[in-house]
Length: 301
Image (cartoon, rainbow, N blue to C red; front, side, top):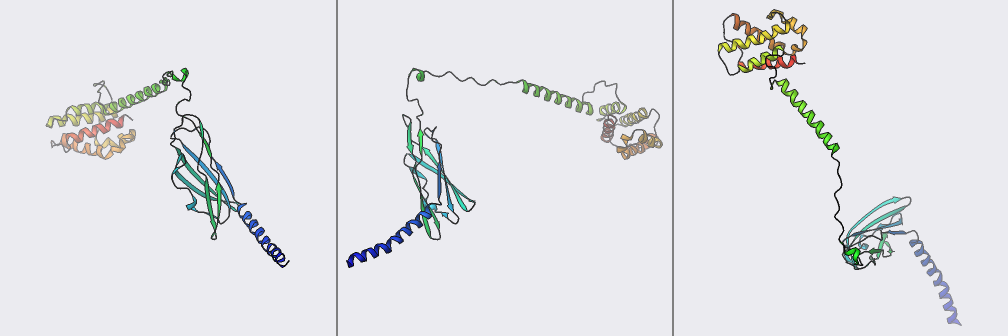
């Protein structure tokens, strides 16, 4: 009787502790939510399967990296990469684990395979909890047809290249070519490269053509003809005989020449000395040519 009484006391004492321990373990396991997602169909030799495992844990738990599978061959597949990330979700922490499995198994018929099962471990305050993840299944198909009948043995017709419409490209090309041609013609006209109507044109354009024909001649006669050509262009522009005293009227009636006022005044000073004092011209042939070109470009505006 004494032995039975002691056994009853021992059971009565241990049973609450066992129930309490089981209740605590269940309370620890219950808050963990595990979800594994994988696309099951459409795999062939060499394809990569991404398995996404989501675990929601109470706040404060951290993933034990040592519980993750190592990269390498697992069952019929190779684990090529693992990516982990976590974020706060209300009062919980959400862990997302992406596992990339690559199939190196060639099959002769459609077949289902299982990936490796996982046993993840989470740690908090020196207390660890293991969270098992069931092995996901995928279906692998052969590269060649499983049935080599007459329909599969017959080569398929060559795929025709897609028809391309060139109308838009042709319109863009024609417009671009027209704009380029117009730009080149304008630049050639502005620089007087073409020389159309050599005996006609605005005064300074004609003067520029005359000076361009005399640019290699450094004689006194060439300088005289160059000076006269420019001065005659001023006379034609004002429709009267021009002198240094009449320059203010030129700048008043043709304000575009004001930007070259200093150069024009200098030209009249040195040309007066050259024409009326019989002294050498204090301007080179290149300076006269540059002045005539600038005046030609101004009168075109």
